[in-house]
Image 1 (cartoon, rainbow, N blue to C red):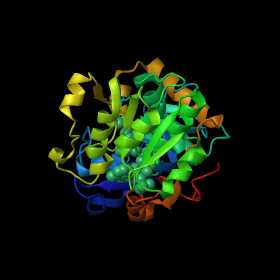
Image 2: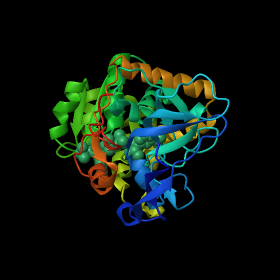
Image 3: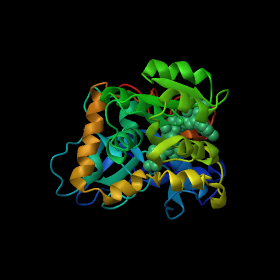
Image 4: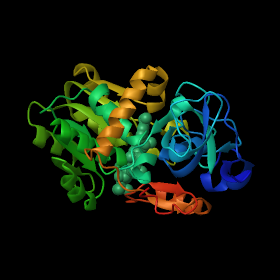
Length: 356
Ligand SMILES: NC(=O)c1ccc[n+]([C@@H]2O[C@H](COP(=O)([O-])OP(=O)(O)OC[C@H]3O[C@@H](n4cnc5c(N)ncnc54)[C@H](OP(=O)(O)O)[C@@H]3O)[C@@H](O)[C@H]2O)c1
């Protein structure tokens, strides 16, 4: 093992390409209860960029290695007293800060140490691309549909940004559970893709009126459950179309992604509809969920999602691999319209970000 490694480090808060630099750092040494993981692939999530821009729900100390969510890698060494894991085993590292135990110092580096409670062994059949994206978006989709809203078979579920990674997973999971979906996208090109995935209805805001179309589709009974990751006017419209007593869970703010002014991150909710139709609008944040779930519940939800992916019930869009030194392209790709796949920073010869 070499004694130094490459790490993608942000010197402070700012535009990602202004603050990120490749640095050489010593390979860390695992302590008791920890493993040293050689990273194979790690995504560039919108939330990772929010952290750098200083607009996320937590702030690391700077300088910080980027990537605060997840990665897949192989165990390179084990600290004293670790049992039940093998050197060479492939694992997902759940780096999300609120997971109990010591924090992971960023996933955008060649090696990292993590408490073994943050590691989830990966079956051979699961590609690195899927494993590297397992802990955030598929788990979010599962929790939104099955726990936050508890949508019942036959009951409409309305969602925005259906073409996002989370949105596609929600479509597939809902299909699996017998839940019909109304899916909102902003590009006509995306409509057929969502239908092919199993989306029952698709509304394209490029040329359709969201409020009118939902009323046409759902009829007098309306829609009682919705998830939104666009916020702004779109989120407000979703709250407006909910049936009386309906629930909306807001989990993202894509319409304001490059904003860093907190005052710009808003949803202008129509108060009459909210009050007189007694609707509920609330937030969801996976980080907070990890901070409040019991370790057993977190492990059970993660294992459930891993099995749904391994059994092909959920298919995670294949990531677009970028060697670490091409991080600028990966960041640009993450924010390009119609990017489809998730950028994955990959290491060494594993540049397809795919099969193991
Ligand atoms: N709260 C949580 O715990 C949690 C967990 C996971 C994800 N998230 C959030 O969920 C959202 C989706 O994440 P992801 O990783 O699935 O995203 P992603 O794969 O990068 O996809 C982004 C999608 O958003 C669409 N989009 C971008 N800007 C939009 C706008 N202004 N209006 C409507 N649609 C827009 C894009 O449409 P085009 O294809 O037309 O470009 C694309 O389909 C993000 O906001 C993320 O931060 C939150």
